Length: 155
Image 1 (cartoon, helix red, strand yellow):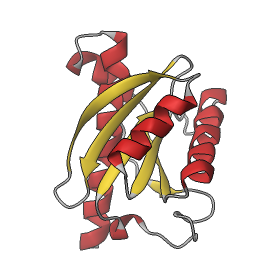
Image 2: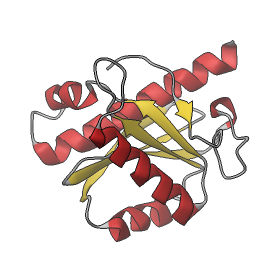
Image 3: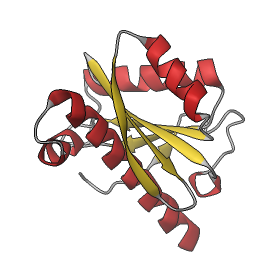
Image 4: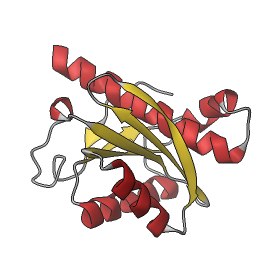
């Protein structure tokens, strides 16, 4: 996965447009959006410890809502599958729309992270089982988010 910085959503992050990545505290949920399955990972912003949680059917937003209600995160992170050239593909636009809908429904700070090659790397971690691969990819996305958060804190 390319270590590109996490970016806030188009409004600058968060509900009020002012949340910055280094200010995020508490639990963070990350999502690896896919056409059929969406992987979910959770982690703690203070310790940067995270792990795969589960994979849910993409067509079931109620399953994502239940996870948000259960984990009560302080922020949400969605992976963006940018092309090798850095341009946004159709899937990337769908992931942005997924994130925008999450933010609208849950009114939480939302951040996007470049997830280029995360699914491939996650496949090695998850023994290539599709259900586990998406959740493992979400954990890699969250690791990238925490790394970026730590770098911003020290800059």
